[in-house]
Image 1: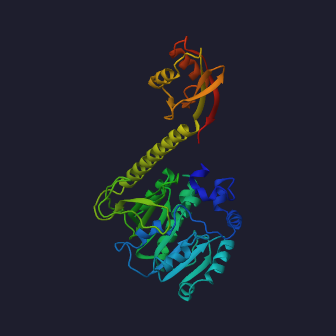
Image 2 (image 1 turned 180 degrees about the horizontal axis):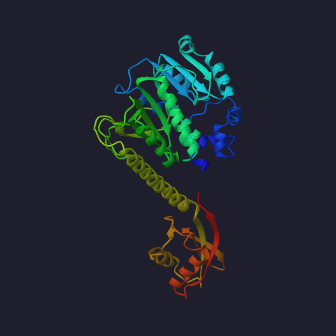
Image 3 (image 1 turned 60 degrees about the horizontal axis):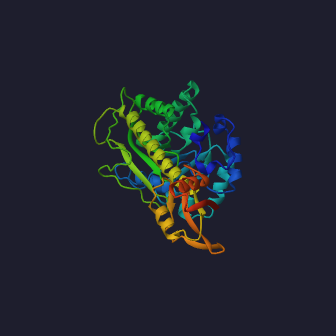
Length: 395
C-alpha cells in the first residue's frame, strides 16, 4: 500500500521500490535531487498548520522548536517567519536536503538566519540534552518510519517518542501530521498508554482534490504515570464544532477542518480511535460521492452524441410539418430533440426531406436503433426511410 504514504505531488518523482526505502538516506538524496530544489511538503502546507501552531491554548509566541525530518520543506523557515518561534532547529538525515536548505538560508533575513539552523542526525538518536525545546514538529516522519505494526516498528516508535520526550521541556508539545492508519493509531495509543503523553488536540484536514485525509495530532509531554488523561470534545468531520472555523490559507486551496479532540472535557482517551475511524469513514463516503458525481458528469459528456438524421417522405404530397410535430411529441428515453426547427432539404423532382438534429445517449442505444424506433412510430405511407447523416461525440 505504497500509495497511502505518498502525496500526489511525489507520484511523478522517484518512487520507492519497497517501504524500507522510506528509511534510506540514499533514497531521499535521490528524491530531493530529482525535485531540483523545489520544496516538497508532506500532506499539507503551513497554512493548514497555522490554526494549531498559533492557538493560544497550546502555545505562547516565541519559544524553541525542533523540526524533525525537515527535508526541503518551506516549513523550516515558516516556523520562524510565520509561527513566531525564536529558535528553530531543523533536522534530517539527508545531507543533500540540508545542503539545499543551507543555500536557501543565506537568502533569508538576518533574523531568520540567526534563529534557524540545520542539523544532520538520526531522530532515533538525537544529540541534544534534556529539556531543550518547547515544541517538536514533524509531518510524515513517523508515518514513513513505521511501515507496519511489526515488532521493529513498535520498538522504533517507542524510541522516537522517547527521544522527543527527552528533549522537550515539561508540558512541551509534540505535533505530528499523520494519515493515522490503523497500525499508526496502535502506535499512538501505545505512546499515550505509556503514561508519558496526553493527546490533547486533533484536527482533520480535508482538501477538496486530495485523496488523502491527514490529521494534525498534538501530544503534551506529561510526567511518568500509570494512565493518561487526555480529554475529548466531540464533533463530526465536516460538521461545525463550537469554536472551530475554516483555516485561512495563502493559496487558492481551501481546507475545511474540524477539531475532534481537545483537553477541555474529560472523557476516555480511547475515544481517539473511534473519532479517527469516524472521520476516515466520512471522508471515504465524501470521496465516493464526489467520484460518482464526476463519473456521472463525464458519462453525460462523453457518451452523448449529436446525431443528424435525414427523414425521406414517400412522395411530394407528404406533410413534412406534420411529421416534425409527430416526432417532437414522441417520448423517447435517451433521445432529446434540439429546439431549432427541422430543415427542409430538396432532393429532386420536387421531393423534399427533413433534416433534424437530436442528442442521443449512446450508453443506452446507438443511432441506428433510434432510426428504427422513429420509423416504427410514423405512418409507413408517409416515410420511406430515416437515415443517420452523422454522429458526433459531445465534449
